[in-house]
Image 1 (cartoon, rainbow, N blue to C red):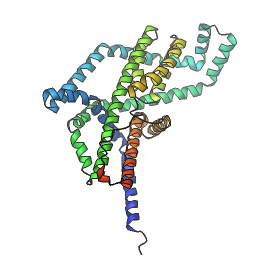
Image 2: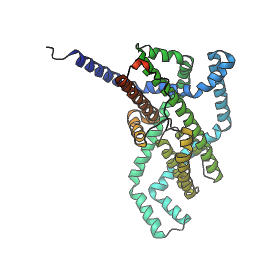
Image 3: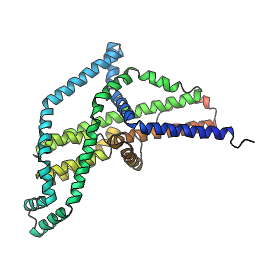
Image 4: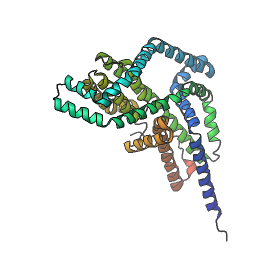
Length: 361
């Protein structure tokens, strides 16, 4: 009698393959992230490419037209708005050391106290508290600087992602067929077709919703901060719009950045704080459910876990990718449950995984 039967050998071999695959994904995570962002970009422009393809009859020409329009729009935006954002960013960067020194020394507490008519005792207590935590504040500022530098190191994606996305746009159908070619039986192929169909719909909804939310946040932040006379309004509004792309963490960082600059510069910080609280309530509980819908179908705890785990694995980019990855895992789990149930209760080849519509709560 063999010590290990054939079934156990197959299970161990499968586990080993999965372990090797996960190890490879971890080692090559930075390269894979670039490809994932290219896929997201492809989903973003796919509707426009398909529309132009109906007119041009050639997909390559349609892709070239869309890329040309994107370049023109970006060039126009940066020509009119970019110089002002650059000047505000340079000015804030130059004045940041003196602003942080005001916090570390406690001078900011005295200025706020005079502005809001606090008692001398309250101002001194707050000033002493800030001065006593000078080391912590410096460490916090250094960590924030490192995070910004880490994000700047990923700027090469701006050039690489559109190039990779062009290949995905031109050969998207071929990639799906390659994946399906690994599944030879009809039930397995239908299962994978269902997974691909659900993922396509989920990713398309996610990318377009994120772009809509980011554009809306940029417009609201810039308009409000500009109307209230907050310094560096356009730069802060642009940063807030960009950070809206990062689920959960991004909006919190944007709010902290805007409030921190308003507080340090004395630019109506109390009004800004009230606005940020109100806007986050409107954005999270009114706008996002309507724009995003239920396409992710993730519990808030699962979303938070995914964000934290993604940050540990791949930093800022991992945080951004965490939500679609978690949603993809949910799709595979749900489709596998359907597959197992139909395999157990009836002839599997009588069912079609594609025909069943995706349930949305």
